[in-house]
Amino acid sequence: MSGSKGKYWIIGLMGLLIGVLVMAVFDGAMNKTSTNEYCMSCHTHEQADLDWKKSPHYNSHSGVMTDCVACHLPPKEEGLMKHYMAKAKMGAKDIWTKMTKNTDEIDWEAKRELEHARKIVYNSSCERCHVNLYPEGITDDGITAHLHYEENAKKLGLDCISCHLNVGHYMPGYEHKRLEGVVMDFDDGPKYDSLAVVDSFEDFTETVPGTSAAIRMIAVPGGEFTLGSSPKEPFHKDNEGPQKKVKVSPFFMGEVEVTWRQFWAFYNETMSEGRTPPEKIYANNNRPDVDAVSGPTPPFGFPDQGWGMGDRPAITMTHYSASTFCQWLSLKTGRHYRLPTEAEWEYAARGGTETPYFFEGNPKRYSEEGFMSKFRGADTTMIGRYVVYSGNSTGKTQEARFVKANPFGLKNMLGNVMEYCSDWYAEDAYSKIADGALDPKGPESGEEHVVRGGSYADDASLVRCSSRGHTHNDDWLRTDPQNPKSIWWYSDIKGVGFRVVCDVPENVIINK
Ligand code: HEC
Ligand code: HEC
Ligand code: HEC
Ligand code: HEC
Image (cartoon, rainbow, N blue to C red; front, side, top):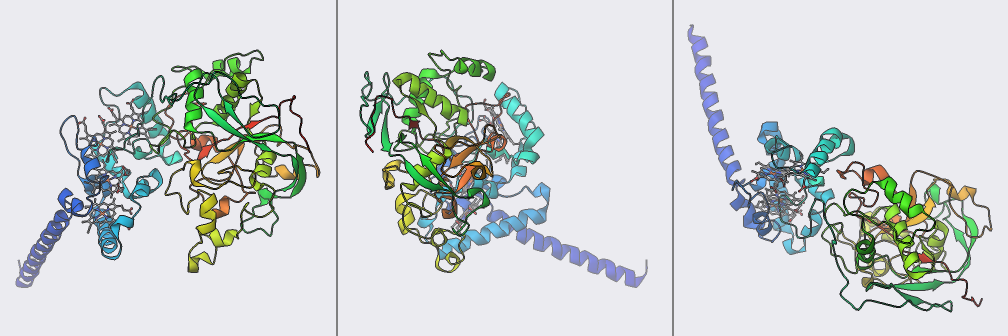
């Protein structure tokens, strides 16, 4: 061994020693700032701390505890660099926000929604610990669900928390498993035993016999209006044109979106237990002489997302579910209930106005996407009085009493939840409608149905009166572990619901 080589050897060794020393100090600092105590020194609010202690990862059968960073950082096994980069980023953001912001003003609730949670929880961490997805004691539903996950996770963008959002922090009301029997019973008030009398074209309250559910119906006068929007309207899309002048006959429409109280009344009377195959249900409900419809099978987990039931709009039911609700209501009342056509829906939403919203204002001013709002911030005062949308919703639906009605007296036509229409969706539907048409209907057949009005999660640009949407059947069933998939519940769309229309009974004379 020559002298110079020995020198290099010593320098190399010293380098290594310094490296190890630096790493040790660094790792020490890293570990100190990775303890649960460190995290909880700031995260003392309920969800993060107390609710972690109530979760299956702290309060587990085996007593094994899972640390905060085990879920909120990528595992070290995936690469130290990745782990520490994520940590530095999170640490910097935490400290910066703590220093510059009043933490009481942070919307912690919104961080609990799946869309956001996917950004702060690492799926690879779940997979690192849960190596065996088919442990002893797992239910059949669990097995079907996990097979579905392993086959489709990439394609559908599924994470473990798409179905297990509550694993890190206890969430009252969230459950991802098959429910049984009567899920919710709001039959607390007096049960109605007689029908409302409808002998004139005026608002009335449908009292559904045998239940304590009441549905306020608004008389919507017929008339002519312009369907769709002009290309000059801000955020106009091609599917909103060409504009057509059409006529709509008078009808009654629900003042508000169908609520959980009303929907559970239907469910509790018509529920099909267990795994009734869809063919059997379709066959029964299609019989012309059907006297009792077959209703939904139990949902997978509470379908209200833990947001509350009662007078909040019912959500996550399929178009078929909503249509069957109308069929049930028709049988109960002897009046003809159904979903609105797209033309009726837009006519009702406009309430006689021809502007982008039924109240004043420019969508560019209300939208987060508008050029000007980048500088001034979007204006929420006016739109906030009428619409539950991304600008004011804090990531949830809202009860109708919090908004003002439109000129017809209807609430939440725009925002809150997208509403099913009876029409099939077609991009170019309006080009097929004749000018002056009376009560136009969409295409004869199609793949997806029309939904209108936008939801609590949408920007102001998408809650314009003319804005059109449609169902995304496959995507909305992403986490449904059942095979065949449910025809009653979409487990992956929270912002969809419906409102009912009632045809004017023949005995009612309308004074024009
Ligand atoms: C210095 C105080 C402080 C400490 C210590 C702290 N946090 Fe935070 N943390 C915050 C604040 C403030 C926010 C809100 C950040 C925001 O919304 O911009 C936050 C947000 C978060 C979020 C949500 C991030 C997002 O983008 O929505 C997660 C997850 C989180 N912290 C986890 C942790 C974990 C895990 C630890 C321990 C390793 C930790 N925090 C330690 C103050 C802290
Ligand atoms: C088993 C995985 C897991 C563990 C362990 C865990 N979390 Fe979470 N954390 C989640 C998930 C999933 C969410 C999003 C859903 C929710 O809020 O429950 C979340 C959300 C959060 C949020 C944002 C929402 C809120 O409630 O403020 C913070 C902050 C947070 N965690 C901090 C922590 C802290 C601090 C710890 C340790 C005391 C911890 N987490 C332990 C999985 C975990
Ligand atoms: C550090 C390892 C670790 C990590 C990371 C982890 N888990 Fe767990 N998980 C456990 C342990 C241990 C239990 C408790 C098992 C027991 O006692 O039966 C558990 C329990 C669960 C349970 C509940 C089982 C029950 O009996 O109720 C679910 C569901 C679950 N984990 C899913 C997840 C998901 C989703 C993630 C990612 C957000 C995750 N886990 C991250 C180790 C981990
Ligand atoms: C498509 C939805 C879905 C996805 C995605 C999913 N799971 Fe599950 N998981 C379920 C269902 C359903 C069950 C059974 C629940 C029941 O019947 O009580 C279950 C059960 C479990 C259990 C056992 C809980 C118990 O009560 O014994 C664990 C642990 C678990 N899952 C972990 C994971 C992990 C980790 C991932 C990601 C790798 C994951 N799951 C992805 C739906 C899903």
